[in-house]
Image (cartoon, rainbow, N blue to C red; front, side, top):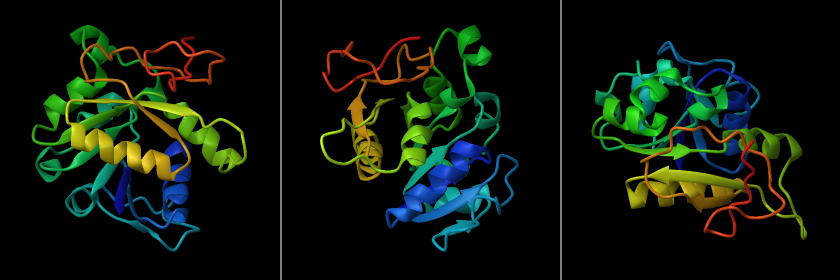
Length: 200
């Protein structure tokens, strides 16, 4: 699979290298629309790209940006693409609060024609990347995803599974405005028993 990752922070860089280590081709770009050379270092399967080039060439695009920056992405190149947004990594969005909706819903409206999937526990992505794959009887960290497109959610969950996560379908984008600051919970709270997430 060719995966595009837009962002220049620690999560974007580590995620780029981890996805590439699992055998996927990775394209990396920064928020300004230019190529992201820092994300392309140290791994031969991570290539720098512009946002437009990345969007047109990737099967799944992961957006690791504050929501205000994600809402400045050019919509046209993302038409027909699966976009996994991880804006909760940067904390609560004032734009989503003011609109009384979710970050994913706002981004889906902005990127009209794209299938947007919210990754609601993005802090877990970095935790697992630092620790390496979990083996034996150790539980996988759950990562909830929400979206309106079933096929797009399945593609994101498949990618998460390949990275060693327990992807959990958290429903559609409605009402997902509160970012989940994620840590593994000792007991399940959601209907899906795999959603070991603590609200903090």
